[in-house]
Length: 141
Length: 141
DNA sequence: TTCATAAATGCAATTTAGTTGCATTTATGA
DNA sequence: TCATAAATGCAACTAAATTGCATTTATGAA
View 1 (cartoon, each protein chain N blue to C red):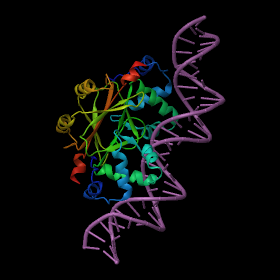
View 2 (view 1 turned 135 degrees about the vertical axis):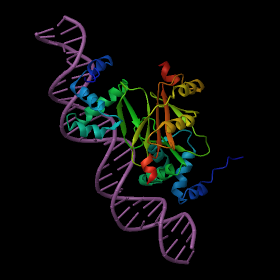
View 3 (view 1 turned 90 degrees about the vertical axis):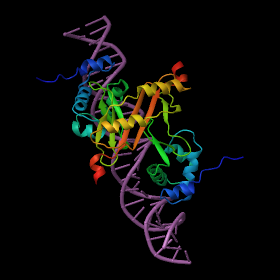
View 4 (view 1 turned 60 degrees about the vertical axis):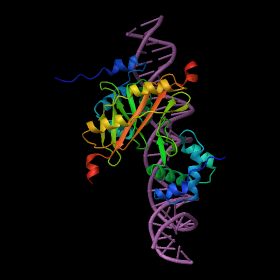
């Protein structure tokens, strides 16, 4: 019994992208990860299978079409994770060791209120939220 | 009737930093801004009065002590604003033109719930939240 | 007020992150 | 099968941020 791999080919085509081996490889790589990963990490995993530029451009288009999500862990570079299969969620990041834990948290009602009060914006289409703290192991030390 | 400038000297010393002319200049510069600004912008304003390195290190220490706050507008570089005088708030950023509007938004109750449910973290000490959307002028076009 | 000291600074060099231009290749749908 | 727009790879480049180190300075104790 194997868990079915999502149909990346169809997913890409529906998003108006070509289903190239490179992009599928990129998506397969992200599929294996449980937390958002850095570009440098993906590069290492791919061992040169994809050029740096292809990687950046690939991620850009995937983020744009909502297949992948970008997160800022205050590490000076972006982190990426698949935005399919799993429910929308946030992260708690340890400011000491970098450990990441997923967090359910429904910001949408707040976002709606924010949009209502706003003078310059009618609608909010997206948001980033990350939480920071010291994880239990780092607190003990 | 002039609005009193915050006592940066005392503020810095309480935070355990030296009250150097450079840091005070940096804080005065941020005081004039109504929205978070990029490092490059500060550099331009300062016209070389402070070395790039001093600027980065100054911001780092100010963020660390909570006098300044960092924000990620998805522009590929950090933005900074004073974290004193004004109430904690978030931002709505136009994904097209970059216009920024402040947003009140009380995430704390959600953050508390998140911390309660967390297995790896006992407390959440900080969070980032930015909202994104198309501003009214960009929607019309 | 003087003075020792840790903190802060400035400069040069370097690293890291991400982008651009362009020629070549390839997925796709007609 | 084929034309074409999209995607890729390479090299060069820009932008963002950091490091090492010698010098200067704010600060508090004497």
